[in-house]
Amino acid sequence: MCQSMHQMTDRRRIQFFGDYLNSLNRKSLAVEVGVHQGEYLFAMVDYCKSVKWFGVDPYAVYKSFSDRFVMPPQDEWTTLYTTIMQKLSTHPDRHRIKLIRKKAADALSDIPNDLDFVYIDGDHTYEAVAEDIKLWEPKVRPGGIIGGHDYNKAKDRYRKIFSGVIQAVDEYAAANNRSLLVDVPGNWYWIKS
Image (cartoon, rainbow, N blue to C red):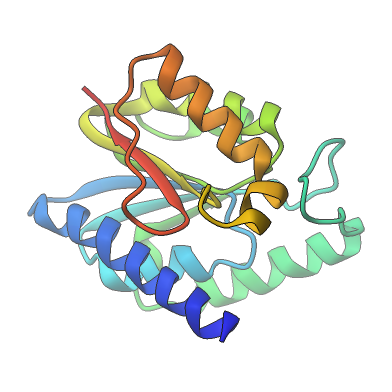
């Protein structure tokens, strides 16, 4: 049951954000901060045929990580990165994907401005999410979308596990007069004005 609910949510976020990008009817630019195993990145590449995708993930052990996961050792990160790169090298649309192995703050200069979409799903601590929003929102064009994963106040387990995500998003939206939208289960976003 949990797996099928997760798959339904993933389909909804792929379709919702993918339909937005496809509706632009032009070549567009998108970033995923926190690629991990690449499921969302590759699904979005397959769904959106006119989008250049930048995936940002350090694939490295770092001091803070998440209020949900235990930090894997470096050899696991290296293996995961190698696996992702192998998948990318054989993907039919690999020319539209650029994987950047850096922390989100260090990758800003590697990615153009005027992005159509930024999706934040990296380190889930309050501090990391707050910093990712603050750093990446200026790179989104007016009318573009910034959003992210693991936001759900309706379910106690999400509120406990991802409290840092929820707090950072809520505080940033309130402090900066953003119209926070949560109509895609488990996701948050706003349209940059």
